[in-house]
Picture 1 (tube, rainbow, N blue to C red):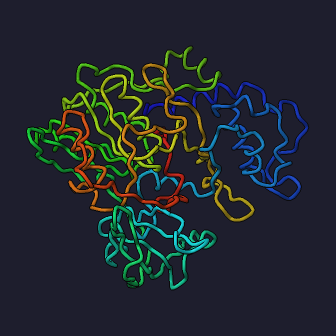
Picture 2 (picture 1 turned 135 degrees about the horizontal axis):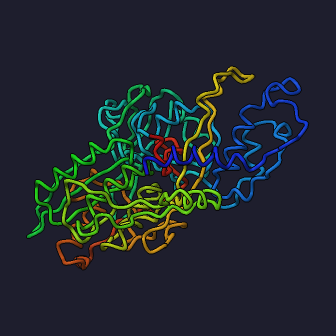
Length: 464
């Protein structure tokens, strides 16, 4: 799949023979009527050739009728497309896919405040190591109520948390009579300033001896383009002779196909090496071209030095588990038993590619380099070896458990990992709760999340 980008470019050149505005008496699009429409033209032609739903894209279009490239794309966006976007910060977006972005280090879940009308609270789901928030003493389970002294509500929380720096007023989540409460003593943090971070996507690798089981735990943050770290993590687990594996993908919004395939190939039974992992269903033009050129529209499990030799996988999920994370579940399911623990996943069922015109050295009317304009475009829908596109609405977990933010991720007393351990230790059967023992309840209405930029929650084809 790493060659797909060059194949697509070649296909685009071939498909350019499909006439677009042939013989029109249009003036050149640059500086027509005092405006520059170079990017409009780039977005339209790229979508005409490569967009999965390119039947929506007109073959003749006066791009000067649209005020912005965004408006142009919206004129033919398919109703099922929640994932394509036009951007004018290509370099920044490209960095996001490799886990490089400006952050305070907080991964937050936003909930309605049960005690204040229109109020919200930001629950700290995870704090990245060596981040500004970690240095300020913020930990998982902190409940943020105010930013710079201003109480959070549904109208202001996004703007307040988007600031480059602030103080945070928070309390700690507590378990009271089986329910989570957060009205305890409040603390105000030192001033926190966001900074650029290059986050290692492998957040934690550990083993846990439970009865006769040597359980591996792998907390994975993003399928960035670093396959070396993934290979090291799996080699460590193999060297420690794990008998079972729990992959925690609750923070993982997706990433590169090549990294996904690398990880999946180390998890699938070795006997399935070379078998189909992912089918890429593309538009008719690309499908025909690929067929003519003998180019496969699928990826297979690749040869890897490390194989864990497991036949069952436990995956911890959340609403933010998306795209490549979901495709890992889908693509492995025909070959091994995959048990999902946590919350319903995001439902990102497409493959996208980030395309810019890197050879255009001009500047638009606002002084932005043309090469910084790009389209992050759906070019395929993902199916597993059985031809199933089985997560369009997200995966519903086998064991539905709300994260209550008690316990650090990877600790044996953290509720979702504890569930996985109990299933493994009891032969796939859940442990029966002791009499009078209550399952903790979050009892809060979720609004959304704040942490990684949203565009990171996508599966991307490598440009290399």
